[in-house]
Image (cartoon, rainbow, N blue to C red):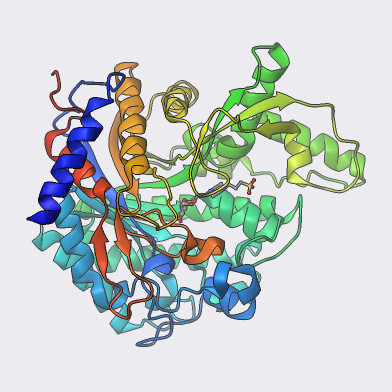
Length: 493
Ligand code: GBE
């Protein structure tokens, strides 16, 4: 009662300052959801037969690399508390829940030789609980937690992993697919490859700049395509679902309207988003990547490009492997043209060859890289429509973090309102957006930032053994939006 009155009062205050907000209703069939990922919430890292994954290994062997030496050992304890999670989703009224499967919980060795039944049961129970509450699952197969035994064989830089992933995908479709309409193969492969195998700044921590990230990406793209074709050939007619991948990018805004900066911004989009998207939604790697990396590689003394090439057969096998387009978007950068970095050490950033920054005028939150740029999502959506032939788009992540000091997260309310307002405007521009997913359902392990950054609609008390979940004020706003399909007090058709 007290909380209800409190939330009502704050919504009233919020409703005053929304003159600029788009007041068109979202279409009736537009889908709203909320998201999490296995390593960030599940905990139970070695319980009931789960195998070790690269994030278990990374946090346990390099505690100094994670804020407060945090780990995902317990996290939100969702392995035991999934019913509470579903109750929160029910409270929000969302159409779907995006979560990921922990590969190691289902296949402790990474391979299909040994299926861990308690892991399978966990996901079956979660899916049943969702369906019983009228919530559709949207499942990500790979949100960064590779089984450690596969990493011991080279992980995403080894070719064998393509088939290992394909078999894991097939098993997942077999086990869960009767109840799943939406699948994602990979979450943000750029982070997997660039951070994990190029720069070495996250698990598995392999630093092989200018090489590792390209080899990794090559295998990820092949693995994605294998999984899509397996679904298409073996499951589509009986299960009738949709399979895609979600790739993240910041919107790249030219720093000035000079021809050079405009070209540099386009180049940045191609090197970040196009690196993965072009092969799937168009065909092959972007021309500008092929040309630049080949030139620099030869000048560096390599006999071939550091960017691996696809055969014609592979190009057509990968092209078109999507049923919708997934995107994760949080922020924007300003992009400037720069003089070519002299040839020397291989490096992805030199290959891209731009300068990026963020404006001091853009509103900050508690994490350094996320500046609040709602207009950027409208520009990005229009760019995606133009560049990839107007696909149906599900925004699979968008959200903002706080430092945990208050449940009155007015900045998050404004964030969702303003980004969604720009999504709605992009739809008026003709972009075919069919769904929107808030990151995140609840505070969770923010990778190297540990539990210091809190992206949740629901607050989680990590000092409490019960991991008590409490709604922030943004829950009331998002709930209203999901229910009414309207961002303001009253909407027009
Ligand atoms: C997503 O990652 C993840 O899918 C999700 O797991 C995560 O919790 C959520 O977003 C919130 O972060 O100058 O190289 O240091 C780094 C977002 C910017 C991935 C861009 C920050 C990609 C993390 C800038 N990265 N972003 S810099």
